[in-house]
Image 1 (tube, rainbow, N blue to C red):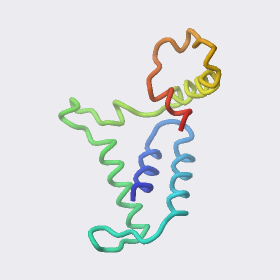
Image 2: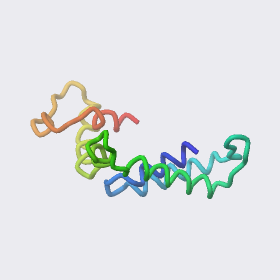
Image 3: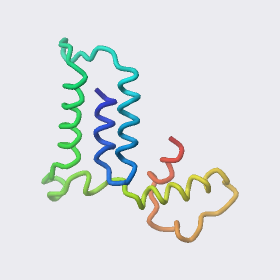
Image 4: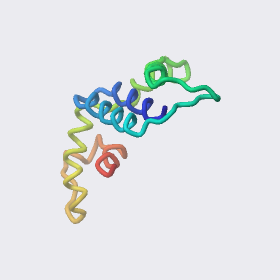
Length: 118
């Protein structure tokens, strides 16, 4: 179920390769698939996948009063600009002796630096 939920969540992100990444996670999940049992009952992979889609979409897109009527995906997402930053950082982080370019002195977050390490 976690793999299906991860694939569904990644598929909701806003960068161009989100669906390719979601498909890769889905493929790996299905490669490792055995029987899915929830509270003692077996469910089909199709049912598990459909459930994960519903849960991911609900968690990501529901507007919450506690978030001033914003959804989590409005507050935090992954967009092409984020992916561009990661591409720049990936090379730089392998050469620790070099300093960051001025264009990355602001607008960069922890997620940008961790993504290339995954």
